[in-house]
Amino acid sequence: MNKSNCGYPHCSSGRHLFARGLTLAGALLLSGGSCYAINSNIETTKPGLSEGENASQFIPYGFYNADTGAAVATVWLGKGYIQDQVLTVANLWAGANGSYQAFWANSDVLLPFSNRLFIDSVFMYTNWDEVDTYQDGNPKFPDEVAGSNDSDQDNFVTAQGDDLFGSVTLRYLFPIGDGRGDPIHTFRLENGLPMAGSEAGGRSWNPVESGRTTLEFRPFYRNQDFEEADSGEPFQSETAGVKLSLEYNNTDWYNNPSRGTIQRLTVARDWGLLDDSSTWTAIQFRHSQFFNLGETAKARQRVLALDAWTSDVPTWNSSHTGDNGEEVFHRAPLFEGSTLGGLERQRAYSSYRFHDRSAVNYSAEYRYMPKWNPFPQIPLINTLHIPWWQWVGFLEVGRVADNWSFSDLHKKMKVSAGGSVRAMVYELVIRVDLGFSEEGSEIQMFFNHPF
Image 1 (cartoon, rainbow, N blue to C red):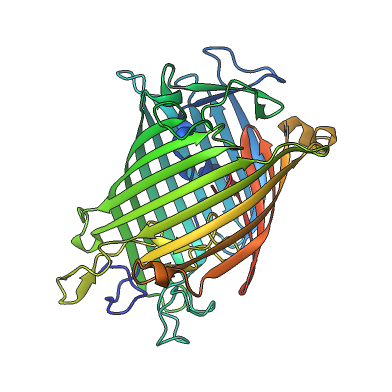
Image 2: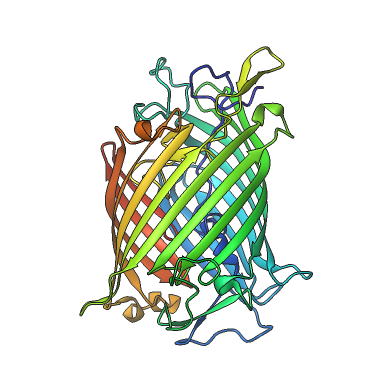
């Protein structure tokens, strides 16, 4: 069947579906920026691994969301296998509604013929028993474009099926700024924060003098084979292409920045090698900035974090005539296009709630790290080594539109506001965000800061 992206005017009958497949462990390797592959953290307040040693840890956990219901899971973390700096993650979860997922990833593998070229690999399979997607097909809304900025929150369809994903990432660190010398930067931590002198940026905005600049090349493949739960109508989204990203990370510490900036430009392209109906191009740019507000009598750290993100699909209105005579538009699937809602942008809305050709989103967070830390005194939890936690307030404004126009993208904007509790666990930032909007509230549980 035709696999052009639907949910928009003049679109053929096929539809792309996004299912919320990644939980917790997978975020570390799929949502992280380029600098995740060029770091070594050494905590001075606890023993670390010696050269040539490896270690592993099983961590059981649970979570809840609307698509899985209550779920049980376990993650295996391996450090030092293959090479000293390599991190291996295996994650399994099963939800009460019958959905399940298997995830495997390796990161930070240094290629033998270069001391600046790293490779990551990620593979994921998910079986969804039931998932909601904001696509056309709901008979209650025959004249409305699902997922558009003014669409009804009940205009979605429920589907079930399989989701298969894989990618391989080549990442090159330029020998400039803090990227000179050893490409694997060592951060010496004291109770979870970098010691003075071990930072990797946050000084002048000059790639030659400060921070690290990386170039990323990522071939990817994803195939979602679904059918609508009520009608049984089959539809599939299959895409294979390449992402090219250039990032300048000029923050003091990639894991929890307190000062500096990040700029990242990404161009994604599917040439239609699997099927010419999947041809599309997407461009995204983001700028993040961090201001250290200093300590107080009760605060160990206070940071104001700001982020601006925009996206466009320039092939949106280009098309060709398919084999069945229908017009096929060259539009990116939701998980690659201009989308708001979910883990990173507009967190008070469900995942991929809004989608169109273009989007813009602005975020502000106040991150407060209290000196009081109860976790080392709590039995069992104290074995996780949680050196700090944060209280965060956030505000976001953004919207999607059918063209990239400054005026169109800055009127009738959506707003998310809320709070978050975050903690550093096994050198990873784990967060629970609660956001509120005109459509209600959402809880987002994930790894890493949203920016």
